[in-house]
Image 1: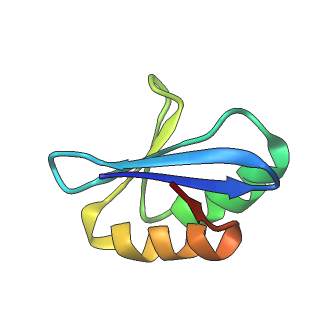
Image 2: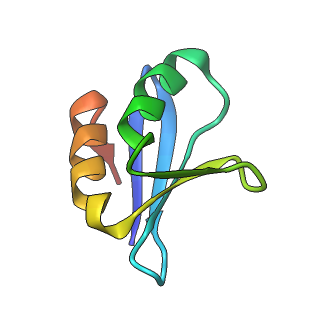
Length: 75
């Protein structure tokens, strides 16, 4: 499943991986990073090779809800 959120007008993308984990990526933006990083930190790990967060499956729904609250989900 794919997700798209807007935070300060910047797209934040998420997708469910086959493992059940959640990948979260957004273009570089300091303001968005200040919102997304605390949501993802301690619920997964930063994958520098892809410049994205991998959130463990057990925290996926919580993370998606926090991103919805932060900016809203878009189709």
